[in-house]
Amino acid sequence: MCGIVGYVGSAPVAATILESLRRLEYRGYDSAGIAVLNGHGIDVRKRAGKLKELAAAVAARPLQGRVGLGHTRWATHGAPSEVNAHPHVDCAGRIALVHNGIIENYAELTARLQAAGHRFRSQTDTEVIAHLIEEHAKRLPFPKAFRAALQELRGSYAVCVVAEDEPERLYGARHGSPLIVGVGRGEAFLASDVPAVLSHTRQVMYLNDREMVELGRDRLRLTTLAGTPLRRNATRVTWDVAAAQKGGFRHFMLKEIHEQPHALSQTVGNRLDARAGRIGFDRATRQFLDRFTSADKLAIIACGTAYHAGLVGEYMLEEFAKIPVDVDLASEFRYRGPMLDRRTTVVAISQSGETADTLAGIRLAKAQGARVLAICNTVGSSITRESDAVIYTHAGPEIAVASTKAYTSQVGVLTLLALHLARQRRQVKEPQWRDWLHTLARLPQLVERALKAEAAIKRIAKRYAAAKNFYYLGRRYHYPSALEGALKLKEICPSIHAEGYAAGEMKHGPISCIREGWPVVVLALDSPVYDKVLSNIQEVRARRGSCIVIASEGNRGIARHADALITVPRTPELVSPILAAIPLQLLAYHIAKWNGCDIDQPPNLAKSVTVE
Ligand code: F6R
Image (cartoon, rainbow, N blue to C red; front, side, top):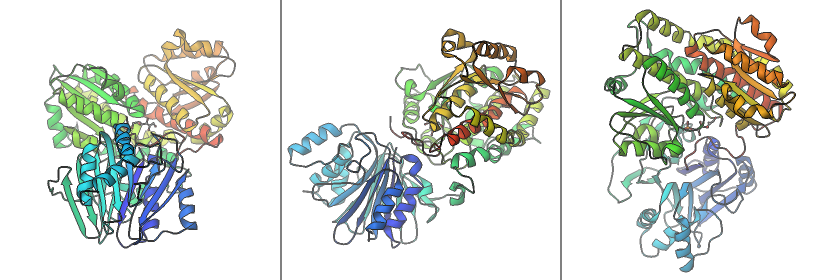
């Protein structure tokens, strides 16, 4: 993880870099640093803690210059301390560098450089890159020394470097971690992600793996690591910086929860072609899906919340399209020796498009001849570029670490995919098809109505905020909902332990923990297994557990089985995972708020997991 920024231009360098770093804080926030070429040498400031600590240090001792770089860290090697914060410098302090990724051979490189006399200050895997460049620069001009150093690295990196001998230049390279160039007038940026540069320019160029870039105020030289020159145009980003601001909400997470009706109208609504009676995927996606035959199978890979969306997708694809589906955590898939071939389509789901395990799963799948379809929110990200086809979720930028609108948009795309393939494989009759499209067209309004329960959910959250353990239970489509509800809560409220289970599994172990007042969130929406869920509620209450029940509106009988009741609009089961997600997200949010948690930036987490 980590966010990196580099700047060359005529704006005040420290203020520009700090502003850009603020937009990358979602990538890590345990320490931060900045380095500036000031005409005499390199001036570095670093602080443990959040970016505001660094901003205070810079305000106390201002930095001057026209070229610089900055970093916000999520520690992988070495504690989140000032000495381990980036930028890291070489022995002479003439080269400064920021890095996102993991250098796997740092220990052997460090040993070699120490033997050659280099003095290391930190416990990071990053510092070695600065010393390696310094070593090569003894006999090579800087750009060549940089390239030679990169060629010795194993692992993943996006790096940004400045050097005293190159006072007007900024250098960057990537291999396995994201890096973009923001191309302005008389200025240029390097950054881990687009929001970092959007208030300055919308012209963005995406770097590929094993590419290197040299930037000046009016200079951009792109090459491979081997030095071969490359040509690439910048692309224009269409969304603006306002889409990445809080817009009056106290937290990004709450804003993003409330953005779901709009996000779903982009994801689902815009793809419903009611007149033609079809789902309007773009041509490339349709062609990709047309090649799907009855012998094909699907393998879904993803991590975290995206994995839960994948589990919902599995139920739908098997039920409606009658396609065999495997769902794997990408971190397991890549190491379990999956059996893939040309008849397998791998569906990789990712909000960021940069998750290292998911990307590695895609590479493995392609190496075995499988085709890859990405479901992704981030245009131009690594996962979209390495996949054969992409269905974008179009949920807009998601800043809060806890994923909300990206999840419901992923489920939305999987629903469209399941229905499209059901029709393509003649598994659905016309009246049923029309019903499905009608339900999907109402989805944004239904979600709007589900959001109206927020005041009631806030009261329920207050009642249960002091509890230390929660269970979440559901069956069928709501087994993944239960996993996702529990993940949301433990993610943003670290003092609470929460687990999600398939309700039928309770008797096989977890029920032994239930005691008086233990909160159990039960997903009891209308479904063919509703009666079975009701029995699970009785089992919990018989042990004096306290059931917070999420049910369909108009279910009169459920109130007497619930210690607290939340309702969502009554709908066909097809869209119920999306509706159920709303109260689960709001419940987690308000419990975390009553507990005074750092909701948008929970400890130990980062938005984009670009390391294994
Ligand atoms: C949870 C969350 C994470 C991500 C996971 C995958 O709220 O945000 O569990 O879902 O790290 O990230 P992407 O979707 O970017 O691949």
